[in-house]
Amino acid sequence: MNLKTFKSIALTLLLASIVGCSAAPTHLIVSPQVSLSPSNQLSGKEAQLNVVDMRTSTHIIQILEEDEAAIILSSEQRLENIIQGILAKQWQQQGLALDNSANNKITVTIEKAIISVTQESVSYSTQSEIIIKVSIDNTKQTLTSRFKNRAHSEGALNADIAVLEREFNQHLSTLIKQILTSKDIKTFL
Figure: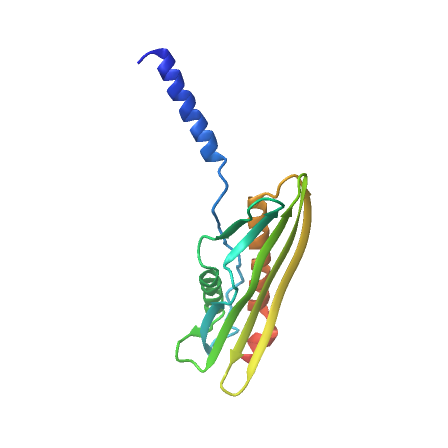
């Protein structure tokens, strides 16, 4: 192989690797960080846990730019599975026994979970909203609580997907902590 051919191949590989590195992500990593101290506040209590996603579309980030196709990003894993896993683990650490035949039925409904980005030529603005409803039915009464988190931000140039992902995880972590530490929920169980 002569030097000219080698240089051409090396340049092609270099350009391909640069383009590959700059490709936009196709999914978000939703990984809220929630860690509460284990306790036995719910010891002796049992409940069924069911998390449902009632959103009409499962994407989490939508980037809207005039005269461009919208960029839509969803979670790598189903959002309801992520939330169910965290709630189950944390409630069990507080002593709650999860049993599919328990009288207490906890239904967690994801009503909204979206970051909408409006991209302009040299700036962007974001609207973030997460709404989660928790209903607990004990065959005699039902407790329903809504947990909401709304945020707005603006910035120069283009929205950074990694920053949006981090913000979504922080907002979701805050809501899940509010659910887990809710005095109304603990009392009702």
